[in-house]
Image (cartoon, rainbow, N blue to C red; front, side):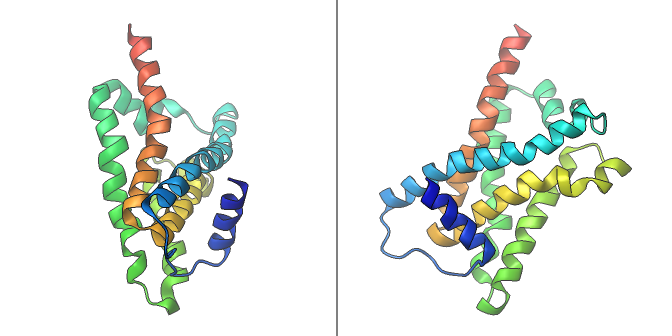
Length: 185
């Protein structure tokens, strides 16, 4: 996993439009599943920034869209949306076009799509002046994870970035939904 992490880091420093060749489906799946703990670690590390801002009183998570979704929708709806529908739609929009960029513009496209992916998630927050000013911190986890999804998309293919995205969301959402269900009983 350490080698994969450094491979992703090197790729993110200098992204290039180069798919892994002669890689079996089993090898690709192995890479995707090895990326899950990397994504969780990166997402949680950068997510600590948001927790610190909440402790400091800059942000209140009660207004976050996920909390509202948990209150208003069924667990099945939440999981279908977060684990299946959102990854498919977001990967088609934000990672699908990556292979359409020419070599000359690929690096720019790679970074721009990751940043836009992160900033789309700003709408999960109640938009205030504070949120807008601190937005780079609030969307940092999604930008970083978007870079990893981009790596997987280019190196392995779109199906694998969808799978990684769905697994990542599942690892985060399934415990949250189970906790919510227990809290309501």
